[in-house]
Length: 233
Image 1 (cartoon, rainbow, N blue to C red):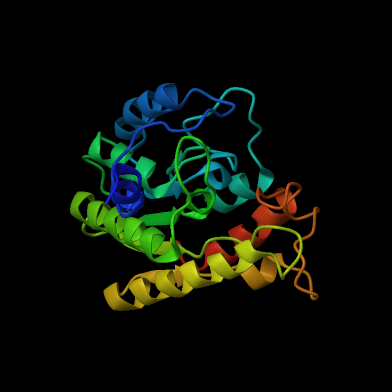
Image 2: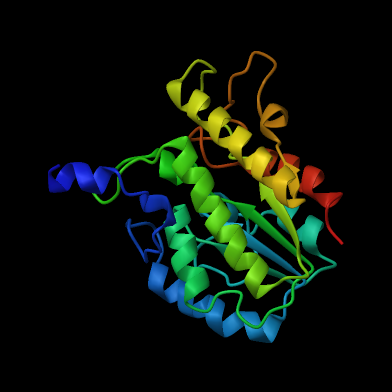
């Protein structure tokens, strides 16, 4: 077996890895900001994820990014830490958790939305299979539980992507979410799937909800906020 084939047989979704992709912010700086802010904030709620969480709002603030009104309205009564990082995959979250994020905290609720970027392959990282991504989430949940054993863990289903319902990525996401739901049931975690609420009646994803058919607009974030509200302490 050649080296390339051996590498393809390794589940990269479970191997802790720091910054992989370039984005509109400094990944390393945000990691340091999280470490500096989390002890001072002592959050009741921690949001773990990628750019969809990152761009919603909260602390630490990324310069140039606007906080959405839905974030303010949902979390105004809580101390909330935003641990969303643009372009993160499951392996990036694992690295961050292994390097101090969440350490020493005692949040009441931890919300995890991760995995959509694992469905994209680039020159820096290959696309992961649905089962690999589920194992990546499992490893994240293991670390969250060890760091904050009394926290309520909320697993978010990967949100819909692409405009048309027959796009191949929709099928991949559906398979991932079946695995996520099974993991949540196995461990007694809350599972929240807002996919149908984000889609139009014909199954399309509107640009009004997700302008690039991935990231949410305020309209999309309001759907998330209303669904998440009932799971907060």
